[in-house]
Length: 103
Image (cartoon, rainbow, N blue to C red; front, side, top):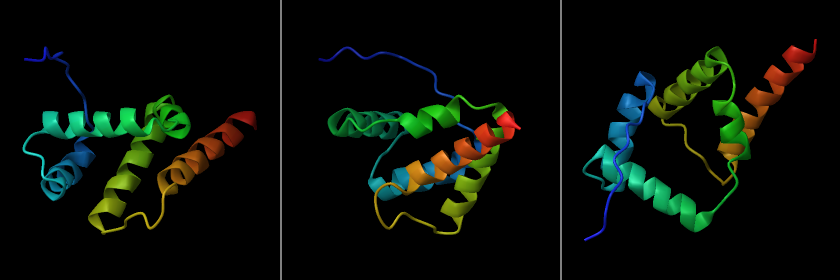
C-alpha cells in the first residue's frame, strides 16, 4: 500500500460552496480526494502556474478581492469557454496591482 503524506490546507471560506459543488460535479467524495485529483491533473499536464503563483504572492487584500470575484462568478454559473481564462483573469489583476505600485 502507498504511503501518504498528511497536510493541512487552508481554503478561503468564500470557496466553501464552490468546493462542495465542484467535488460533487466531478464525482469526488472528500476534499482530500478532490485535491489529490487536482494534483494528479496538474502533474500530468505540467502547465505553468506563472499567474496563479503571482496572485498568491500578492498582498492579502488583492488575493481576497480575486477570491471573492471568482466565488461570485462561480455562483453565477460563469464558466470558462476556452482554456486560459483564469490565466488572463489573474494576469490582469496582478498587472493592475503592479501598475499601482509603480505610481
